[in-house]
Length: 137
Image (tube, one colour):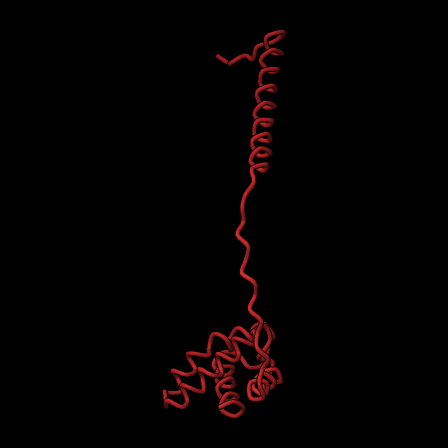
């Protein structure tokens, strides 16, 4: 036996209730979104940025050497200074080159990918270490 949909007046009443329920449900969702949007939210303010000190002569030469190879893009000056100082300290301490390369690899890879430099990966890291040795240490 096949199910038969009600016809006539009852069908229109049931359809009306369905439309009314759907409309009320949508209106309730919109109202709750509006009232949620009206709740004030306190967002903490970011700390004032610290101004970077001007690059000194050796740090500027280091940055220029990297820029000529396309390896300074996207790296803040503060990061470059910290990196070159750390690299020189590691070189002075006589650490193995592989360990020194490991400490600059991520920054060199980032700069190389941002600028699409010809040097990539370990070649970019070796350039960073060589530039530090020649211009800063």
